[in-house]
Structures are given as C-alpha cells and as structure tokens.
Image (tube, rainbow over all chains, first blue to last red; front, side, top):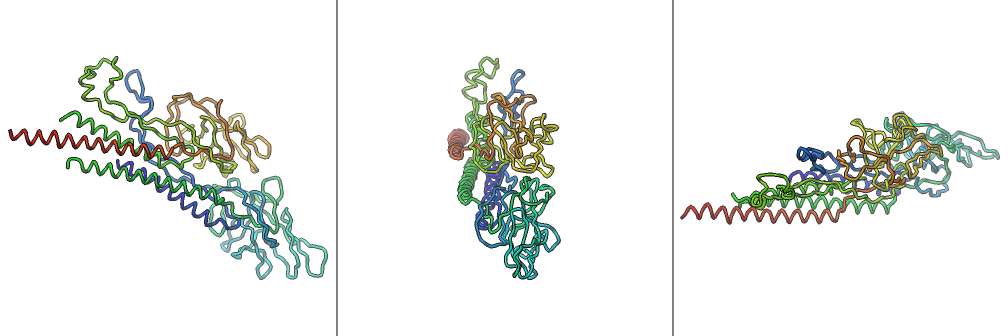
Length: 263
Length: 253
C-alpha cells in the first residue's frame, strides 16, 4: 500500500520536472538562437513478486509472472536540434546559421563557449562581440571609418572604408560542429560548453557539405520553441500529475480503511 | 475464525497490489515506448483444474476457501501513439517490433527510439548504450554515424549525405514470448526468441508515446478503491457481527 504512495510520488515528481522544462522553454520563446529541451522519462526497477517463467508445477511454468514496477523518473533533457525560423533584422552584425554549426565565443575565463545566438555588436575597439562583450572567435575587428560591413555565406567578412570603392577583407568566421550536440552543457546566456559527451568540435568554414551550414547576414535565428507544442505538453503534464495525485488519494483512503478496521 | 474473514483479507491484499500496478502505469504515462501492466486475478484454489488430484480440491473446500488473489501482471502490448518530434534521431516503430540495445548486461530490447550520436560517433540511447545494427555494415553491430544530415528509411537503413552508414536492427517476438521489463525502458527476452522483424517499420522524426490510457487507468483505480472498501466492510462485518457476538454473547449464556 505504501509502495503505491511512493510510486505515485515518482510520477508526480517526473511531471514536475517536465513542467519545469516546459516553463523554461516557454520563457525563452523569444530568445534568439535558443534551442528548446525535451524531458525524457524512464520506468524504474520492478519488484518480482512472482518471476515470469518460474515453475508453477513440475510440468508447467508461470506464464506472466507478477512484477510490480516502482514508478518513473526523469532520465534526460534532450536539446532539440531543429532549425528556428530566420527573421530579417537588417542589422549587418546579426548573423543566422542555416545548418547545424555553432559560433565560437571567447569567455573572460579563457574558455571557448558555443552559441547559435548571432546578435553581435562592435565594442570600442571595433571587435565583434556578443551582447555580453565576449569576443567572437576567430577574432574579427571592424576598422574605424568603415561605411559598410558585408559577411558572405562562407563567413568572409569584408568592409568598405570611407572614401574607397573597393571592399577589403578583414577576417573570416568559422563554425564548430559537434558529433553529439545534444550532449552540450548549457551555461545560460545562450552559451554552451563542450563536454566529453558532446565530443570535440570540428571547426570549419561555413557553407561546406559537412553540415555546418551557411551564414545569413541581417537575419537572426528565432528560438526553436514551438509554443503550440509546449502548451500541449503542459496540458499533458498537468493531467498526468493529476492522475498520479488521484492514486495518492486512493492509496491514502485504502490505508485509512485498513486503519479503521476493528473499530 | 470464519474462512470468509481470510478470504476478504486476501482480497484486500490483492486489491492493494493492483493499486500499485495502476500507480506504476500512471507514473509512466509520459515515458516514451512504455508498456503498461494489467493485473489479473485468480482464485487461490485450482477449481478450474479438477484433473489435478488433490485432497483439498473437494467441493466443500473450494466453496469455503476459494479466495481471490492477484495472479500476475501481464504487459499490454498495444502500440502507443506515434508523436512527431521532428528530431532526425527520433525513431518510432510501426508494428510490434523492438530495437535491440547492447547494454553491459547483454542485449536488451526497447521501443524507445530516442537516439543520440555519442562523442565517438556511434548511435546510442540516452543512457549511452550502443544501438544494435546490421553486423555486416559495422563491426560488432555498432552503427557509426558520420557528421551530416541523417536519414533513416522505413527498413532501418541509416544514411548520411546519401551514403549508407548502417542499418538499425529491428526484431520481433512470437506472441506469448516472456518479455521482462527491467526499468530504463528496457526489456529482457529469452535467448534466441528474437527474430528479424517482418511486419514492423520505422518512422523517422517520431516517438512512440506510452501506451497507458490515463482514462481507463483512473477507472481501474476507482474500481480498485471501491472493491477495497467493500472488502473492508466484509472484514468488519465478520469482526463485529459474528465474532463479537460469539465472544461476548455466547459467554453470557
């Protein structure tokens, strides 16, 4: 009887973390370059009351057995790798990736972080940096007096200086591709860190056939959260939570009945 | 003591185990590829097997001592809904097949097709166990997935950029095969019972949801609850009406 209480509690806990994930997805539905996560669940171990295949008599075996499962747990939250919609901003330093690649950003700690959020800016020295001031890697600096910045699909950055007609190349962007992008470590601010699960990134020039994707200047990749799907998931999570709480109720009442016996 | 008292007690215990089965099903209503359990009850004495020569198996005894107990739980093998996820490494099975997974304990089977590519480039489950593929296409049945867009055909052929990288092995079991759930969405099967799938196919970008029907589970729950209440009524009836009268009133005579 108490087992049913604990089993139902694991179901409620699993749905609780499901709702936490949905809440995070929904609150980032306007975060450029955000990749949503989806909760995955697993069943817990089973208690074998009667082992299936055990001898029922000298000639026969138990056909089905009696196994009582002990509930569910949240196993993983997977990063959804779907491409978000591209929205036109017209800003020359807004970059979107059409493909699986990631931008590389240098953190103040010296670590390289990876992001799909392509809203870049210029700092006082002309370096291309994120909104938090972390420089893009490999570093690109826009010279003072540049009248226009063009970033090609293959990542070549060229500028036109005031008084000149010919554009000059000032750098080229490179993207990183992970063998298992689902294993990246989210550290907030739209940034990921590499882990042993994600593997070492392959760094390459955008636009190739290796799946890095090409760069679109003047566009931002919107969050890949599908608000409709999240709402459906939320309803399912809520109803599943309710169902498990009904079990808690039922177990409690049955327990009460037993306690009242003999009164 | 009346045998009915013990019959009601056994029934109450069986109902509380049935409740645990329902609790487990409802806790796994969001577990991908989960197969729900159904509790079945049996009568304690084998009246249905009169051929078994047993001195206990006489009519009087079976009428008095035929208690209802939980016989077992059997897996509901109906398919869950296929839900589109759009993730290229999510694979749903149409039909009764299973994926074969190479765990540390040996080959295990699952309906959860939420796969990943590990850092060493092989197709694995979320727990990191390699998915078993056609041994002709990869050493020891491991599926190596090079970088690039992955497409998985209905027969399990996995190709990247148009080049075949491996083939996901899909197996089926004869009806009545004893599949033992081990948790973590995995099932164990008797040695040699898995055969190559003939009637199942894969659907890329979809996952099979749990086959637990929340509505019918809640109905079962209500049934279990009411049944337990009735048995408790019976128990207290034996206790107060019969035994009390017997112990207090008889003594006064």
